[in-house]
Image (tube, rainbow, N blue to C red; front, side):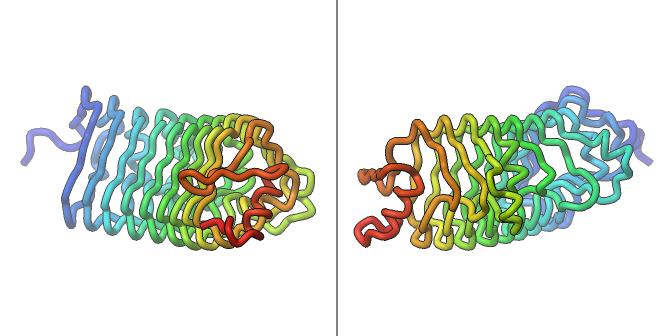
Length: 293
């Protein structure tokens, strides 16, 4: 019989934890006390072979100080955060209010960061960096209820099943975004999804207040930034790269405002600009020598 039960164990001063190369073992026993990791700030999970969920519902409250989460090469993971099973009281308390960096790398079976349902998921109000690489089964980046009010950097690459990146409601919260990089996601058709309500979207403005860099590369099915009727404004955009997007015929069907953008990068030394961003994309797509490849 052990001297201490798991309910009595507390890692009071632990701030960083790295879990690597395991198989057939769950990460978190349910018997952990509520205060088992009061100061844990950085968590890395790497090469865990058989886990389906990284942070189950009962652990979210126990990781309330978590600031940085790195997941790498976990071949079976389907979901990062599990919110099913939480009652309303616990959901209100189960907020990752300190999480500012989320990095997901090489998770071939990941379909959702968390599943959208009738109940709210984790609050990611402090998230500043979201990096998602080589998650080939990901079908939804985040639910439409998410607010990314402090997100500074969004980098998504090699996510082959994403047909769009974010919903219009999420796009409206990206008031702090400065860097947007999307690459090698071959099923992506648009960045901001068109919900089908074109009449409602008409004259509805979405402003990316602080976005300075946008890179769209190797997106074979991308037809536009958004096919909806939203008016987009990029008052701080100075650098834009569009390469390997052969189906992109226009940026948006509605007006686009980019007062600081003077040219678009096609490759390492080929810049192009004509009148405005929409005209530039349309002209490039029509000219054989300027195919977006």
